Length: 208
Image (cartoon, rainbow, N blue to C red; front, side, top):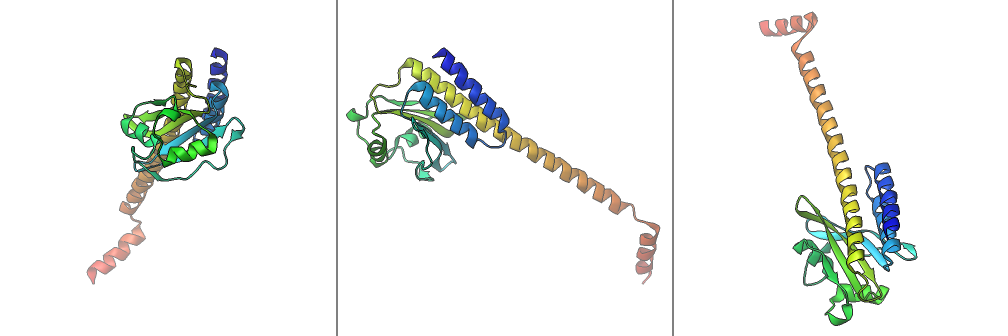
C-alpha cells in the first residue's frame, strides 16, 4: 500500500502543478486513484456552494463516469448521507448499508451501483465544509483503518487543489486591482496637469 500511496500522491501532485486554475483534472485523477488504490467500486468528489451540493467528478473500476448524477441537490441531513457529512463536518463511515435505513438518494445509488458500504470525508477549509469525498464499495466492511488513512490522503489532495486554485484566482484578482489603481492614478495625474491650450480655453470660458 505504501508504494501505491506514493504513486498516487505523485500523480495527483503532478496534475495539481499543471492545472493551477482548473480543479476538474485533479478531481478526475483523485477519484481514479482512489478506486485503484483502495480497491473500492466508486469514488466521487462533491462540491458544496453553501446551499446545495453537486458532483464534480466520479469514477468506478471501469474508469471516469460521464454521467455523475444530478446537480444542486439541497442540503438535508435527513434525506442523504452527503448532507450529514457536510453539516456535521465529520467523517461518516457506514460499513454495512443492509443494516441501516436508506433514503431515496441512497436507494437509487444502491440500485445503480450495488453499494453496500461507504465512506464520506468532508473537505474542510478554514473550518467550513466546501465539499465531500465519497468512497463506496459493493462489499460490506470495505474500509478498515488502512483504507481510511489512505482515503484521508486523497481528501487532503482534493483540498490542496481547491486551495491552490483559490490562491491563484486571488493573486490574479490582486494583480488586476493593482493595475486598475495604477491606471487610475496615472489618469488622475494627467488630468491635473493641463496643457497651455487647455488652460487658455478654460480662461476664456471663465471670463464669460
